[in-house]
Amino acid sequence: MQSFSLKKYLISALAPSMRSPSGITGWIARRMMKTSNPYSTAFGIERLGLQTTDVFVEIGAGEGAGVKTIMTSEKVAVPARIVLVEISDDFRKDLKRTVDDLEQYQSTPSYSSPKIEIYGNDCKDMSSFLENDSVDKIFAMNVVYFLDPLLDYSKELYRVLKPNGLGTIIFGCKLGAVPKDGNVFINVEADSIKDSMEKAGFLVTSEFVNVSEDNPMQNYLEIKGVTR
Image 1 (tube, rainbow, N blue to C red):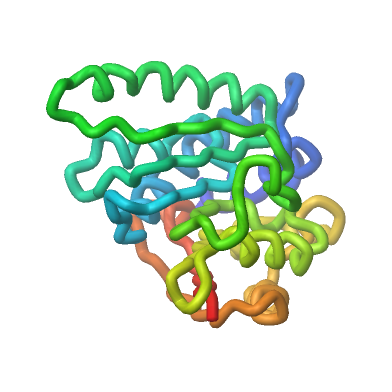
Image 2: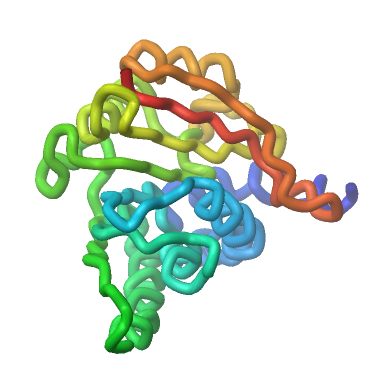
């Protein structure tokens, strides 16, 4: 519990650098996120039920734990198109290195190579690379706190997802670990997050995901939105 409290304090202290890490404090924030996010992200990706025909988008892809899981885990089908969105320049450099390292899998003759794309856009507007009704699944771990106003982001996510229950967005939320400062961490209450998603048109459910009994920093609330 002491470790959990320390990490919560550090998250609060580093709040300004958490959304788009840069500089010295950004380096510290990135190091901390690299210890707490990858396991949760991998667990969440494995729960998505990806299909080989899917178009998949990860918002806040970080250093690439999600795409690495997709490309290396036997539990995950590799989708036809993978779109990685990361606004942090520093994280995006790490992400590009991760994707480059994964090219060894794409060189295998029997391997069906997906299209992997990396963008630095704010996901409030993804019109330059995602068409209406074109995406099957979207995943975002520890991202929803920063999306302000969340309703605008939710509308954009709804726009790109396939309609009639064929499109799904998953927000992984560690609400107990983030500060309620109202400045950087804007969306920190499950009910208000769900409300914004419902106003955008989603059918919303939630489920607590227990990733680790020993490390509560890995556990998260899964907030799922399905198109109508």
